[in-house]
Length: 466
Length: 69
Image (cartoon, rainbow over all chains, first blue to last red; front, top):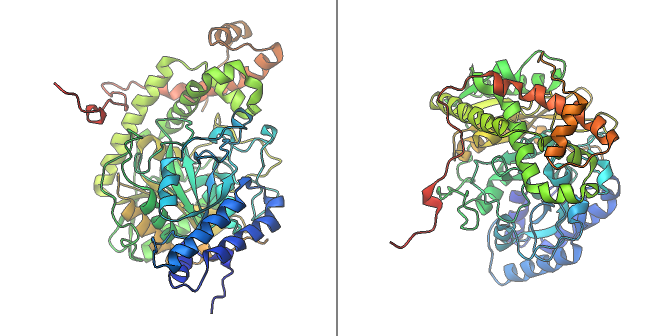
């Protein structure tokens, strides 16, 4: 007898029930629509709710399955997309007045693949404007509230996605990540956020911020669900010349709760610094998680990656510099349409020099070399997902121009796969994640280690006090 | 980080004008500290001698459509 409410079923659990015709996709979709109706007034995650489309898709899924045409684990599963993923005929705003009336003529490739797998679209989720920085109340778009503490937000930029999954307002989402925008909100909301290898998932049809650093990736309640979403979206796309033709393995089949013999390197000099802008609790939580992995049979060792000191400046230049290049025409012509955070930061980037950009790319080259060297010895590199827990709404705005260290940007610079998995809570009840990163296109090992840790703990089962 | 970069308002105005920004005096005064902060953050990139390290971006001919010769 199912005791888990429908809105907190995982994709894996729901798909077994749907395939066995014990759960109707229509009933499941309606459960989410009811919960959105009940809670989204205060959580503010949806920019566009596509209730009619969702129910129509759910009915079609139900009819197809009844006829014996079952497409797989995502058939009839209700998900939502960060509102920078293009959806044909459905408004895609990037949470900006600049694109308030933008209706794409085509689906993004990632959504097209999920749709082909039978996923049901509940709607489009809020984000930081153009996926840059933290939430900006002056954009006029929904300002999402963290379900673990409504006085806090979920950082950025995939904040709507993280909150919606955590609060049971969708079963999974696709986020984007330029310097941590999947892993940070995931860490702040006690969900799983995977940034795969650069080129693993096509960026075609997703509104860009930085072509060098942008990645698409799944956000889910569990690691198994992330493996399912990755399997459905990964693979070469002729429409995205940066997408990789590397084979797509069965990520779900590779999930084994076993880390024995895995070698995990921890650059403690960077990830566990003694500085006031790095909170103690995320470090304590990550340290405890690493000790757990050791108890489970992994070998955890301290390592040095000296070029990490260039990670923050390089990521800043590339993120904002390329973002400015993309927005230059519109920003100079109609700056008033942008929120103050993006407007100000893109204006700063307009003053960066060519020398800044070239040096950033050289720093990136050095960082890639050092990481790949470390990964000859180690299977994974680990640390806390973020330097802080969820920020308060009445605190300083989340800016890309910040002296606080980023624990995530180096994996955008190097393109390596990295995941944030729930790892514990502060005494005040705020979640924080463990970040595991791996070799290029070795999402299987990253997912396996994250899965093993997840299954050995209960953090992912905890629900926000809603 | 110990370096604190400062730019004169005159120089800053010139930079913004060259970049095509049309800013009011208030906007200039608000933007200048953020620019100076960005300079502080970027300083390590210019303090290091990267030696022979090339830029990370590269052009991959394999991504081009096949050319008939």
